[in-house]
Image (spheres, rainbow, N blue to C red):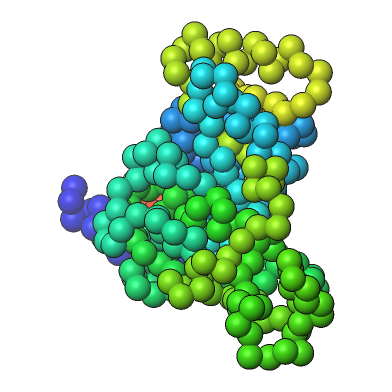
Length: 396
């Protein structure tokens, strides 16, 4: 029995190897039909787990009126779709109620592909972020770098990173700021690993709302002075502003307006308890204008349901394409056997039994099926190397 199976497989293998073009085409078609639904299921499952875990770990999010989905995705995953600006008085109003802690987030800027998140030390405590090397934020210009961001940028405490301009054609407001890296965060397996964290006031300096410049009273270039009197000194546009915050020029950095009136992109809200959270939600739900307060879990659940509806439609399309492919494979085999009819008759006349001939045909099907499954496994293994990229595409 074993010898017969071995012989059937050998004959099938030699035949398929001789007709290699047809064999490769069949194997590739079947492998792709197997790979696509398995790949979609795998990516959607991982996306659901990541979305749900991050949302469940965030009690509430405060933001300006608009798309709640954009607000939640930006506040949790720092996506490029930024919500409308949220005035800081709306954030401090949460703290003044005594019902919850509001953690501001300003995610307008980035350093290359890595978002710069302006926030407070409360964010690190809420997310359970630990410092693996260096120290925490202390002064303006300090930056904490996530684990993956540090690897990608090849930086460590003591190095620096430069913010990317939001608009290359905006010559009047925002200038790239050189951030001083003071610490690297321990890996968490979350979007925080790819982010750079600064104090919210540092993010406002990147925005152009604050700056530092040389001391006008002791300047060595009198041409920068536009007007001088006993009470004030006014400089012209020639005055050089600092693009890096150091211990020497830290004292020169200031804001011309009240920082308490500036804006952020959102805020994470951590209620004192469940009752306090319910009271806050009720207050904001009753308001027809002003900021919105949402539960990320409910918003993300709606997104997941949309993804699954799309996946169901894709599954139906893939099923129809798969059936069509299988029927095509059957037709190819039937035509092949018809063309080989004289060959099979000759084999039978040479003394080969009908069972052995059937074994040759079945062996061909088994070899093609096994090769298709192996190729599908290879494709899945290759896709696993880019798992984070595929999931990030869905989340972003």
